[in-house]
Length: 354
Image 1 (tube, rainbow, N blue to C red):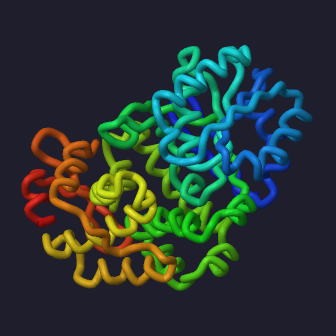
Image 2 (tube, rainbow, N blue to C red):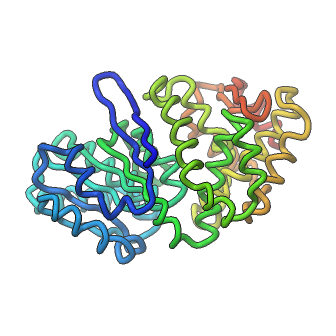
């Protein structure tokens, strides 16, 4: 088993990575949640039929009373209506402040269940059991939980760290290839911004089978890199913004497709290539960097370019949380493996994007 500990002021939590871990979730959750009598399990209509039968028996064997709330699969469930439904179901279950919430699923489930945990009874513990590659390397670690608003993604939320993160790579076996590739966009991002050797390692493994042979190493590396950033900047006011490489423009692509045409990973993939090209034009990024990123993304079926109107760029940049007043911090690469925030006027960025 691979183990990481996220150490924050006054609290810490473990990230455990091992195949078959879902079947032993009860014993590890019991250690992390000694006061809890009840566990409220949130999953979705895709993941629930696949993995609830493996999760619930070990939880109940460890002595917990459990309740299950299943949400419709998809981004549309990350909304105020589903959040309110979770609150009411939690109260119907008799959840108390010493009980806990378990999120079994991808990023939508983790974000929604985590925000519900952060706000019900002014905050209860929760455990992340991410089942997609994207959620395992990104959203399950770091404590960002949120729902979407009509104005954009993740605009209402909180920082609420999990009590435990359990990652079972076996859950990746049921992912469609496109969903696996979606997560690989975020995996490749870590190499781009923090670790050139890891980027090269990934570039040498251009297909899913090769990557799955090394999956525990990949998960550990990504989570370790994110752990270091979160420990340094829990509230996203400093270097944690480097994790948003490719996201400023990626959010514009998601918006352009009305959050239906392009997945998050696809949008981030194209956003990274475009951001690297922007950095090259601004003289920040060495020539050829965008091409190197595109060569690594393309074999996985990820787009390296997405059409987008200036209006969509303008809307996304206006909502970007890295913006302050008339300026925005765009994450660029000084070289592969080293990212920097590059402050520039929003209008100047839009002119470049024309």
